[in-house]
Figure 1 (tube, one colour):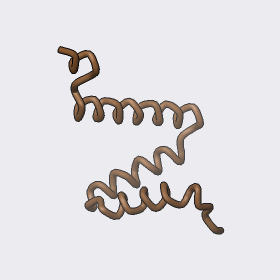
Figure 2 (figure 1 turned 180 degrees about the horizontal axis):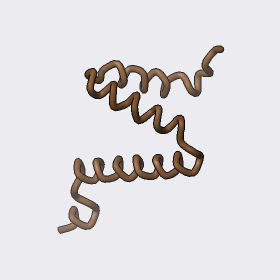
Figure 3 (figure 1 turned 135 degrees about the vertical axis):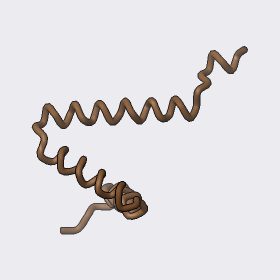
Figure 4 (figure 1 turned 90 degrees about the vertical axis):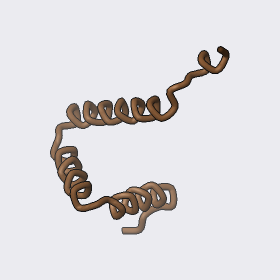
Length: 72
């Protein structure tokens, strides 16, 4: 089944990132992916919210200054 161009880049990016992981990272990824695939729709939404929160926390730790800090 061909992949449409709109979906091809994110899928390839995910596969490339997976390939760059070491064995422990790949094992953890596969475990979490299986958990996600077997989860109920409600649990999937909860997992996605949790992951998005982790991303925001990581981004905030990389860029700890907000616009108000820049005015000081």
